[in-house]
Length: 292
Image 1 (tube, one colour):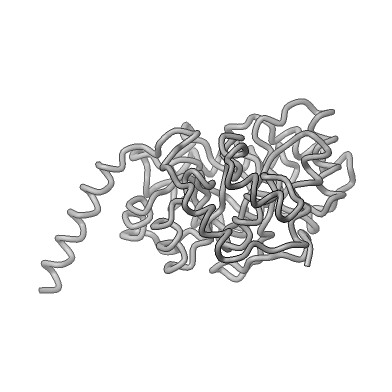
Image 2: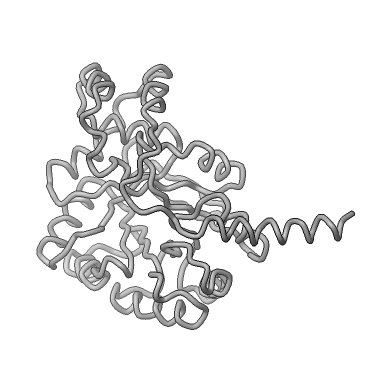
């Protein structure tokens, strides 16, 4: 097995590469072309961008200039906070598709949970899937309470939840919740923005396998069944991040990496968790009363 063959089946029946290529902060057409070309040559087929990144135009142009066929790749984009709401979400996605020079994306994500237009945005996502603007719909940065709250009105639940996830932030309860509800967890910042690379435990495991600490972390994600999207514009690292399919971590090594959890975020905390919890409990109490 290699990076191209390693696919996850989503709850809606579509398939998604387990390992992808993150495009956050990849700016400039020349840099984009170089990074996408190298990633594609090394077997990456999932490419992850977002409205917030401001590079959808460069991503689409790179695919065209490099003659990469759209039916041979899996493209994700995300709706930014300012574009949430029913009409704005749909309008913004049509603009994203224009920039990407595509008729549809493979996966469309709500980038961050915000209280304003929470359900209207998801209703737009369900509609856009029906219209064929996206093949699959999901969310990003949703915690358990956001997903529980969404389930009170959603006709279709997200098939992917993209969250910050790395050895210093293992998010085990959320991972288990997502597994139970057939939601694939996808790790952004899978290497913790470098914060974890010098951990002695990881260095020891890396030495035992003749691999880098980054490769050990990505292999840990792989064996946990998590999707992950490392990013780099350096050709050596792009190749290295894809070279994790020729070794395996044992149970002790997996447990040692799990034990590094320190609840440490490199990004911001998803907001308004208390407010979502209050609203969810209110709905739950009303339903419990109606069933008693």
